[in-house]
Length: 325
Ligand code: URA
Image (cartoon, rainbow, N blue to C red; front, side, top):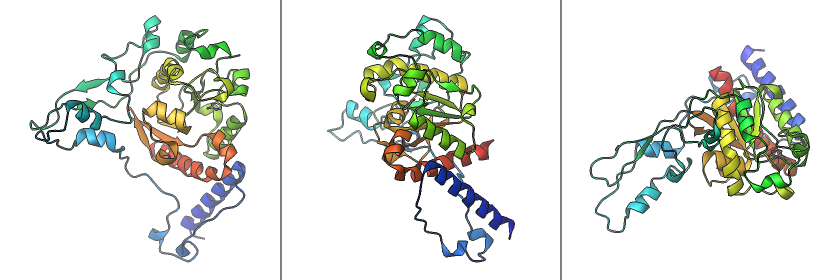
């Protein structure tokens, strides 16, 4: 058996084991004929590789904005601003006016996600507006996770504290290359004060292990750290209080890839309204950190057929990390 073929067989074996682990019982696979025959080497593609990361349109739109005709009578400055908004990023209103001070003090709990925004005219003179140039890097941080948790303290910033048993702080390796973000704790997480320890968490552990990692080597957190009553989605007013702590943790850990699981995590990290079914499987950008949106493990428990898609997404993450490390 040629070494290429044995590599394919070994990859296939690994993937089947992973899918079995996840509980997939049947597979519909369209395997091209050449995979069976002695095909010319170049035709056998074992797994997709990511040659080049091309950010989604908003950043490209900022660099190559469509010229806007000044003469159109019905174009207002407001509509131009709305049309040119970088929809995957927080709105202009949320942007800080200066680089946040990451030193530990009371005001540091206010740190927002937009550390460096430089505004300069990059459109031609015939256009009306100035577009912001985004310096897409994470802010430096000299905090520790302990500093951040100390700031959170016995948090009463939103009403979720009223019913909580424990705050489920993020957990994992400080040097993790890979971070997973979910929505908010459920009953088990509330009980144990740790994210993803219930049934969805057990499935997440299998996914992580299927990718070849150990749970303790990644970093796991949620948009909100207190359990919403009845496991409802956290409200915007609750997210706004809690999310900044997670963003500070991202700046401390500086992972290479963040996997956002489900709509709440995806939409709140990326500042988009796009649904997870549409956006999943394609790398997005969060200040230079690759973000892979995928389905939430709790959704996979309800619809196991979606495990296949999650596995495809996780293979992209695994291959990216393998390539860059
Ligand atoms: N679902 C989440 O989003 N987070 C958890 O920690 C557990 C379940």
